[in-house]
Length: 228
Image 1: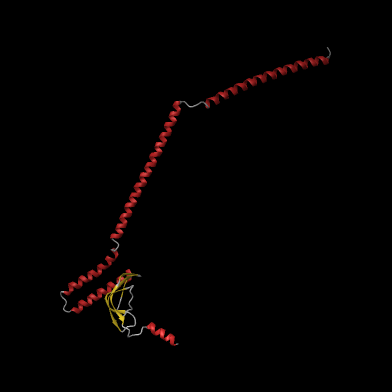
Image 2: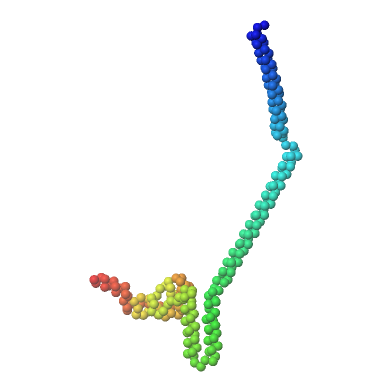
């Protein structure tokens, strides 16, 4: 046998042995992969297995307990807020009533000094030898009282004889005619009082009405305008 034939024979045997070895390794790998895939399939089946009745019952019980706890917390919040609102309502009612009952507290406190002065004047009247001293004391008290009411409470009086008659401010309890051009106050029986710009008591007055003998200022002005 020639050298080339020997080499071919040897190469053939080598190729055959190599092919057999590679085929065996491939077969073993396929087998191992098959085992691995089978193992994974078993794991997947284990994960996707349905829950048992006992597990489902336990899950439902846990869910029910969670809902009961949440419901109890909500009920507690509702009761607390209802109690807070009730306390707030009662507090508002009390504050409103207190504001109504003690609205004049500051005014009455300021009037106490005038009351004390009147008590002193009355006590001094028993031993006074002349009426003038008593009258002077009363005038002082009146002046101080009026000043306090004007400055602290914006209370002002109005109405004096000779003022123009204003039906919005004056209450006429009688009238008489006289030589006046416009209705005026003849006499003031009771002064009127205003709190800031609001009338709290109308002045009670006697009104002097025009008797026609005096020309009104308006008529005189109209006559002078026509003459010009």
